[in-house]
Image 1: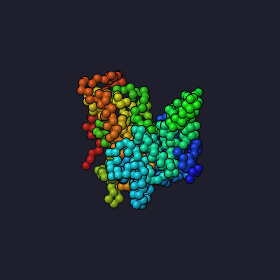
Image 2: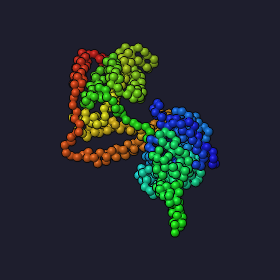
Image 3: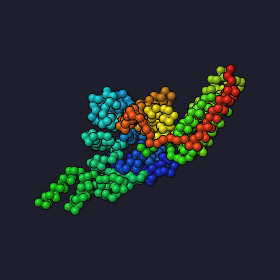
Image 4: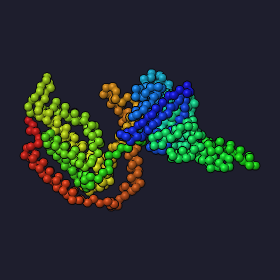
Length: 278
Length: 264
């Protein structure tokens, strides 16, 4: 399925109040199977942009196409079949008295038969690692578990594209890793992932493509390796490369590369340098 | 969040310079006026007067307009229901069991203006008074600090709650919920899907707010002083005297039998 554009944005402009442009001149296309991270300061337009991907917002100018169809002409339910959106704050979407009911809400809205709904709920419970908690009261669970429920509630609708807004906010490192492992697993299964995040370590480790936003415009679009190697560009979006990358950049004169992404890569290069030195 | 919701908008007109106590009393006078009279010929001019004061005082009219739009259901309800259910005066129309009288219609119009007056006036107050001034004003009028704080906070949280509500609607729509479809029972049921998270979020917000103010010594038992003190200016005295005269006239006029319908 790789290589087909699933989201196509053409000259998109958006404003909430006349002439106060929150997004301007956005052009991008996202293919099936991509893992895209959207980064940028608060207020740079990330959330406004992704809200166009599932038709919550409609362009003021330009167009957004999902599978070649303009979002202005597609009904909400059809969009929900294609693009799932897990909101940042799980408490904004959880309303049921049990985890099970919460996960079943989406697929029921899509009109799926009860047997299929139950099968999906069981499958997703296993995926998000909450099997055995199906009759629990969601609000009594931890923040990390609620976050998983919010993602799970979208997963049961089985959309090929998933938008995840800051999935690791408010989670400790272990919770973040568990959440990101889940996201990675979904991507490995062929899901297209669009993720908003402020955590560059997560971007470096998981994303295949980064879109950097600043003042409602796309500042850069490329692989994490390409982008993190350009500190001046990142500074314009008030974004900083992960520490590993910056260590490499500051040790450039010792022969370290400037586009390191992970600790493992850094260690390998250190070992090479040390081997040369001795 | 990309949208910011706040009622108070900065400004410098006379409405902003008036003492908050004067403005709060003004709202109470408008309430009294709107309750004492029922006749639209007495209530409509007050509404126009409020709008004119807002206009002269630089109140963001776009927001007042939005408010009027959201009040339209209530206004229409009043215009329709009173004539249908209230039948004093001359009958002017009859069709089977439906009976409409002149007083019924006039009363409906009067009640519509009563609603408009009693909503637009306090909203104008909130639009031109910062939360801090509002609390000071309420305290200046004798309300204990806790009560004043609670009231002012409730007002200032309305826009926040609207913002959260919008986000919740979006989140549920992303899960395939069609909010504005189907008959009324289905719609109400769907609204419960929105009210549940809204309630939970509001309780969480309230809890956090309680912790936040408590950590700043909210219930410290000593005497509470303020960094700012309210003082009435010349304008305040003029406006306050105006209230007094207006109230006197209103009471006399009403006692003389004007401004309301004689119901039999």
